Image: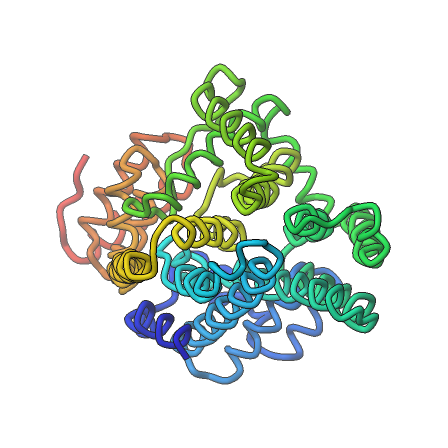
Length: 443
């Protein structure tokens, strides 16, 4: 009930928001998700079939963007409940568990209202992150419960099945086998013995790797990704992205759907992020025995944000939706520290203030999604030197028949990046619309 209330208060104002940006590429203009026949036909050559199944379900229900948003909110609410159950299981393994009875609910509420999650919830095609997280955390909870109850059904059937479904939504679910080992380490288990219950997931991960390699579509994507940068460049860029995302989590005051982050070629450009990473890694090792929740949180964040993107980098260096799966142990560690350091009344007041602040920031952030123009106006303010943001704002203006403003943004985009062919094309469109309206073309 409390989680449903938190999600409702934080996200009610996003239900009227329209489709945005990539939503048009993957949903509105994608015929293969407009019918069940199209979805079945795409199974042989497409990727992320389970994600597209949910798009097809929403589209065929004919409820418009509101139906997609409502589905995203239901997914987010269920994820908050999974965080609550996992926090319960984790706190129950700690010797201070009598002092941690309020930690699971606080952790789940913080997860439900943290504004850094808005990109995965309010941005419709951010569902790839939230739906994958739902299946990923369900698999983790199935494994934890199976270990506790010694249930072979949960360990050898439910957990592997949920893992496969998560892969059908987003390939980054490949980290689940390592996450199971990390859970064992964080709860005082031994990986040598726990591997006996984990082997089906590890076997499936090997099969998935082979399928990705021998799939023409996936192999082409991996090949293009591998050619983006050198290994040292990838390491430097990912460390920079890692530090940026941690800042966004800790101080969610400058949330940005398209941040302007540099593509680095060597470690000399990432000395501060490198020092931050080394410091956090040292803290993780130092806390492993006395404050294992801090170590677990840092190790989980590193696992979710660095390894995959190190070897298979993204064209977009970092997006806040990456934090959706990565952030809940950080919130768990924060809740545990508050519970152990503050007495009951002060703990309640601090928790209430924190929840109120985060909810307010989420409501304010969701106002940006009211239209495509407001979304990209906000993005241009935060990434003024990125050509793509100006081009996208210009395109939003063009769709709204604000042609002079559109032309201004396209011209700015070309000043920043003369090779941006989309801006060249859009500038011609804007000039054509101005000419049809009898306006005056600017040089």
